[in-house]
Length: 176
Image 1 (cartoon, rainbow, N blue to C red):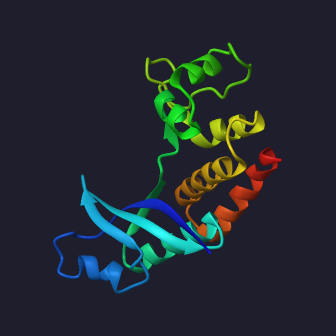
Image 2 (cartoon, rainbow, N blue to C red):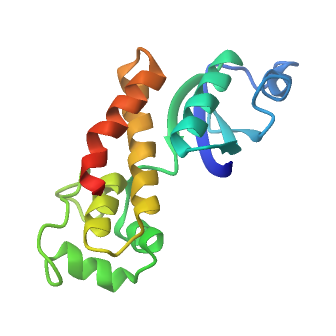
């Protein structure tokens, strides 16, 4: 078993309720620290599982059983240039060169703020691109794919675990 660390952002529970913390700690979320910030419940997990996919799927299920409405999983899938450099353990200057095509062509385009001065990229897209160029380990890229897939599965509703697995499989071909 491996311990995976991630955060679930949720709503739907009153932090002033007497049973707020016990809903999580008495249930299956005793491996998470619970806090409330800016109207959201934050569940910081250190969950043991065989895979990150299993850890996230079980944590989402457990948070829902506690009555929470799960909105997303972090680390945040949208990243700035500084975030990319930090996660890839590279300098910001090196990442700027990749973005501008000075080192290699084909860097993924930003997903948000495309015309503004602080664009945001999808970390899974960037991590896969960096993995394909041997700049990050496969585990880094796969973790990015799993978190991105988890957020996509949460958005589409339905059977979370099935949607998560399907979305991961669809992107894993890029990690070969």
